[in-house]
Length: 133
Image (cartoon, rainbow, N blue to C red):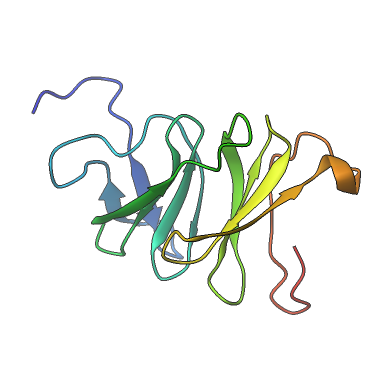
């Protein structure tokens, strides 16, 4: 496999900021990421990638699935978080939505942010204490 200066990877760190894992390739050798933006975990490693969708690997770095949105518009995920049920929530700035999938990649819902007075959502956070996004 040829490596270049532009090999893109996700590196996980522990609480003392020591690298503990690098995730870069599918077991077939294909690159997993093109333009990663945010990372979160729900037992798996969940990465929003503006060009590839939401890429999910297990904790060992083995590819599980990619979510590329619904056919409603230009899905380009940026912000991402996980709720108490391990569902994955992701903001899509260009089609102004928030998509929700379960931990296995099954589509649950999409929310129009424009209808709620929010424009171009870029990031999300989940408040575990109050169960709010």
